[in-house]
Amino acid sequence: MTPPLPDMPWEEKPSGSKEILWRYSNNPVIRRDLLSTSNSIFNSAVVPFADNGSKRFAGVFRCDDTNRRMRLHAGFSPDGFNWNINEEDIGLTGANPDISDWEYGYDPRVTKIDDKYWVTWCNGYHGPTIGVAWTTDFETFHQLENAFLPYNRNGVLFPRKINGRYAMLSRPSDTGHTAFGDIFYSESPDMEFWGHHRHVMSPAAFEQSAWQCMKIGAGPVPIETSEGWLLIYHGVLRSCNGYVYAFGSALLDLEQPWKVIARSGPYLISPKEIYELTGDVPNVTFPCAALADSDTGRLAVYYGCADTVTGLAFGYIPEIVEWTKANSII
Image (cartoon, rainbow, N blue to C red):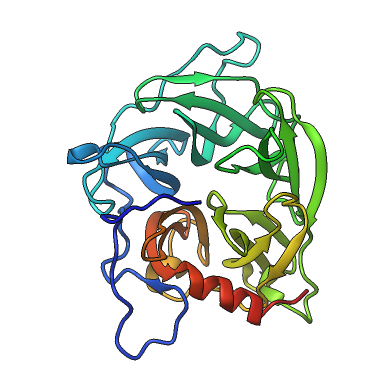
């Protein structure tokens, strides 16, 4: 289960609000120009790190620079609100020379398993695939083999082994903006060789849940609850004005996570605020990380806004679980 995290970032629900997930009143929590060379900072991953001090939380951040190159940078925060992100991008070490040349990297996730922090990201290798690395200090990152052949995106590890194997969700794709996309599950004995592939979810029918009718993809690391794995995931609607990215929730079986217990028909968050509606890619809310406190049930979700800045939203895990079941489309 998720360990206690009493000092996680938090803001109470606004008075009178009926939202299951509500936005931080001072969004965006990370602005686009926090670095001297950043065009945008979004779709990033954070985790608890040190017991206290300036490195209480750590993260890997997508920072597109003013050359518009997609780069990954590490950073730290004392409170989850105020971030000090390194000016230099992360340095990967240990990779086989055949795959070590950097093309691009974006949309990272970070998962702690045992004593290592595992990073997955969309890694450029003759097209997008899933890069894998680990770190213990967010200073040195040890790169492994890519998890899959191109083309793949949204590689999200589970925070513990399942049936004795590492487990990952991913979304096979193509070289472009991918007008399709299902979520799949894979297992590995060693973080290098992946198999036992299973289908998890497809996009919903337009008439049933239009916000997720074109493609879907896993978001933050799944959260273990007594009701199943709580998965926050994004969905895409192809509107007459382009793609619209929103996110909702699902419950997956604890020991067979390719089996979906419940899946929300309504979205939790869809572009509404100005920082979600306008930016380099308008109409995008894209979740990549979540912090949770098991004692209070609090949840803080970090999400990319319009491919430009980072937003933060809050909720209670038990409420989201019950809402997901009550509004399930399966």
